[in-house]
Length: 264
Length: 135
Length: 61
Image 1 (cartoon, rainbow over the protein chains, first blue to last red):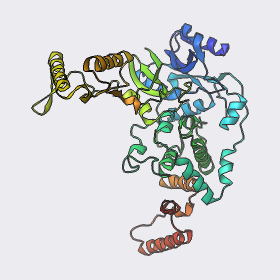
Image 2: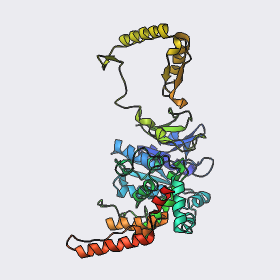
Image 3: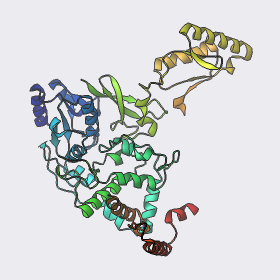
Image 4: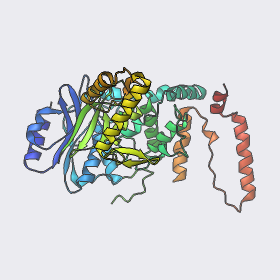
């Protein structure tokens, strides 16, 4: 693990600039989220590489929100990749986190990971270490758009048919923070159906990702049915960019087209 | 202030998915799938995702309850144990040990389950014991 | 706001294999009876042209 990042964090902890660093630790061959409060703990730091680059990434921003709710006066540092930084920017604008109280610790993603993710920007602006991989070509959306309308419908109906309504996609999403989720509203989604209303359930979720999805890919990784959710949400991001000129998570001064909260 | 995630196994079914309990200052506040567990590889079913809910749930039993006058009322441990022992003994004598079945839980510790199966087999004299992880 | 959502939804439906013209939004006030009738009639014709709901057809099959 990066010595540069460890040194940087050691300094922040010793100088008491942060109450703790929310990152990942590797113990006994397992990688898991951890709040580092003492410099000695940094020995077990991991950036989430396991078996392959980024093989053990977790929604740290989600945990960060819980920490700041419990300790609103404290400053925390958090591990961020390109996607996480996009997430932080949006969460600031949605008033879920305070920019002044968060110190992002940026690492870049290697080429192979950037290509698998088809990531627009596989490194954060606040990057401390790691490569600056190139923007990867997007093939997933083209594949779908190469199909005729009827083919597309059959494709998606077949994919959604494997859904077991585990809510994994929603639970793990670092951008999902609603206290009352529409997907659990009986008037919209009937209880007890497995798979849930095909394709309504997933189209509803996709609509709720408008202006929120930061393309981290955790949803697809958490899906037991291996449904290509990311492709669906990538299309949403593309639509938002084309129709409203809005790029999710790139700008602190620009709000998502559906965000009516006062930014300043 | 302490936040950590604790690797454990899901107590619901027999799959044994690896999950992480999110613990803030000694209190479980959430669940995450373990990405590094070979069984589930970062995925969970809806039961696994909600594992943290029952741990600190206000509706958990804290005192023995006995049915009195058709209603469940609080009882002392002595009263509850004496009554249960008496009833089990009577049923065993009248209908035989195999008329009794014991349902335990994967949410108990291994030690608790060992104790219960020992009780079922050696004291009650039946093999009729099972628990929810077999489903 | 609704217009923004509908724009996105139409494109999403198209990506998912459902003809975007099956969803239509128009602003008609209660005083514009003739326009209302015209819109509905036109919409019904459009739907007839597009054929039965592909999701219902799938269920029947």
